[in-house]
Image (cartoon, rainbow, N blue to C red; front, side, top):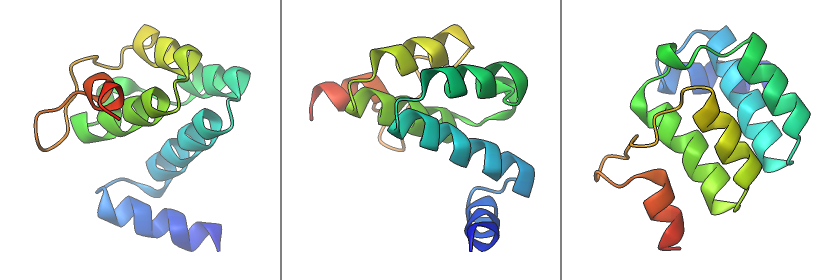
Length: 99
């Protein structure tokens, strides 16, 4: 079930189960364009300083690939580093522009 998926995600990303749940909820909010829910999560549950660059890249990349300008703005306004890169040094916005 969901708890097993979150446990697997948390192990893969070296996160606590609570942190994995928050990242999964962020992905859910971005994928479904739930702006208010994304805002709520970012303001009450997510501390961007506790996320690594790969996690920031993943969320920004997802938002950019969906052309979700509001999600991108919310992430950046809440401290997500615009220069976060993947393992190849590509930023999320650059990757989305090439897709």
